[in-house]
Image 1 (tube, rainbow, N blue to C red):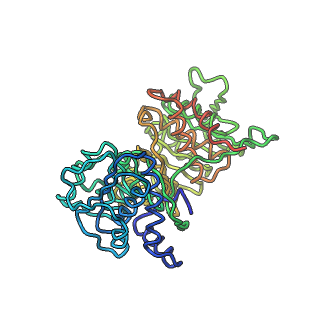
Image 2 (tube, rainbow, N blue to C red; image 1 turned 90 degrees about the horizontal axis):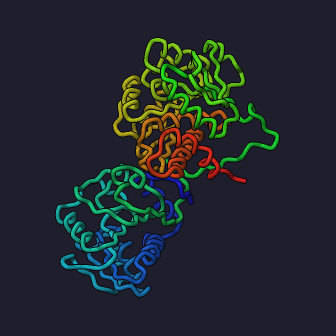
Image 3 (cartoon, rainbow, N blue to C red; image 1 turned 90 degrees about the vertical axis):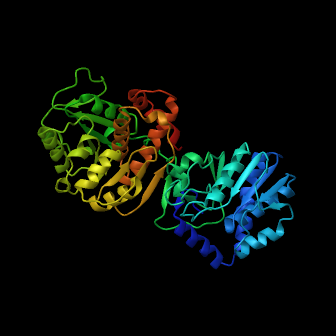
Length: 464
């Protein structure tokens, strides 16, 4: 079992088939999955009345099992099934439920609605009649639970297949997370999300959810260079690079240095500023990771600084202006992590001749073409590795949508890279730390406050 993996509909189907091949019947697996979901619904309902909306497939079969389990627990339960069950397992589950089943939802009212109309695999809109039925029932039930996925949301993308779909208080993912659980716009409809395990084995190459990292504190005999030297290349606008240094200093690296043509007017007392020629500064063999891009500018001089930095072949994070200047012929042998927002991602895809749509597919294709780890930033951030590995971030506070927070993220990534983390893991750790820092800051914070909170988010990830 792997609680963090995220599966496509076809991967989920194959994983379930592996369980069937091992000797478990479809009905037995349905009892396991729906039984786990029923326990969540029972706790939420707390003795209140429940309506279960069942579809014709195995998701509807789950609904009949849930209804039976709730009735056995003492809840008043009514089933609405606008279409008769069509699979053997769903028909069997219907036969074991002894309560009332209505073909129409007219005038049906209860305190909790359980949506088992359609689940994983739905790729087309609900019919007009079913969409209207779902909306009407949702409007007459103050609490709503979706089993596996809310009906009308595409499992592989999170696309809303119908207009005016209801919002849910709880969504119960059966067996494994699906991409829709962590992708907008569908994710916003789901309320609290919980995973119901059913014995799905780890799937090789499956995407995963970025979870709290397990970061060890420095060894007792550690020193600043052993913890990692992170160098940040400053450019024409010093504020952005200073934000990056603030977060890098608080994210694990033992030594953070700013490589600037001229020293900032009032640099922090604990920041080392190197104003020597960039090529000379990069000659320091103790540098473990570089960051270039925040405040770099887009002039010819900025391009030259980027090329010099790339020519050092050090592990490197590219952000902001560096992404707008980057061309395929600039990439050398060093490990690279790119951190584009949607506009920068579109430019990179154009410059690298990548043809893909959507943040997830663009990130994966760009990583494969360029050899970079790609952190595609946004309200549903995606991290893609050149080999195809993909990770999705859980939602972060929307207060992150303020100027400068991307510079803070870049600094955290560079710091984690300098500590010796492999590039993909450094990116995933940093995305989590960034989101946790935002949660710790509360509402309406500045980028500087976010950067200073990085040490507190790091503390939340430390292991003994």
